[in-house]
Length: 336
Image 1 (cartoon, rainbow, N blue to C red):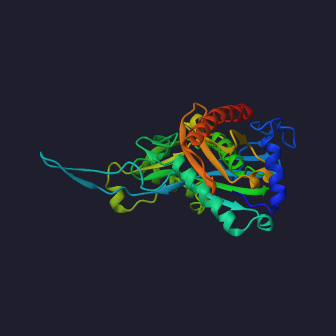
Image 2 (spheres, helix red, strand yellow):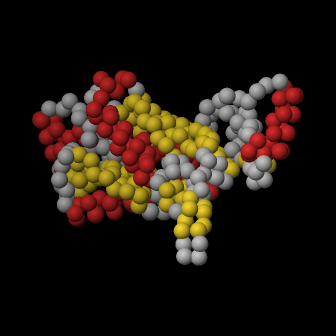
Image 3 (tube, rainbow, N blue to C red):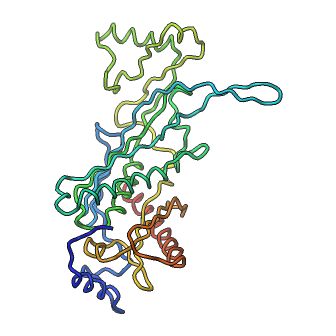
């Protein structure tokens, strides 16, 4: 929960107004009305997907970058009654979606470093839970789309989230909405697999034509194979090549089920959604609900030091799922 520098009298005044039978917020909204989002979702040369979102005066940017991870899958022995079999894990033991959250230095004037660190760890934990490995998926995303070369090379998505401003409150919902938009806007470059000999021939002819070596950043010539003599002797050794130029590619398989976050604040016998910074600072507890457009629940997290009953938790979860469905569909329509 955010800790604005409000006096006890100011907090009491805000809560009394919200609990009034004819309660209307200072901006005229009802208790469960969301503010309008300002959205810009585009793809830039520095990212495979991005989104810039403004909610009130809370401003968040999210960029998605797909990078290649090399992983030599080990052989694992499996003992059974008929004999001994061996197999290789089809995926590396590392997450396919990784998150980094940063805040503008200006926010240190309004929030303590401890508070910002807590929000960072909360967001990273919630996103890790949303995209954890589940048999053939990473959360909502199909696992097969991350494979470039089986048992050798894989895509890893890096989410870089930057919070410019938190002064409008409800930063968690805004942040997850930006992640949703950026991932929906992400396109993985099209690739094709090559045999080792073909890859090395293409590598040699390209170097002869332009005299350049492999791009150290792995952008244009990342697919040129440089295998050892041992690799050349392996008939199944493969590499891959990019098929698409920048700006093309394939949208993420499973993007329709990416979750958004709805923070539900218990308020007497009712609930408050999308609080301003002052309202957020006056309330002691919230329930953050992660759900998708189809109503699939990804997680529920309590924030704050207040106490809630099991009935309140269940009711808040129901409300969170309902509004998460509406928000996810609205965001999808906003980017076509």
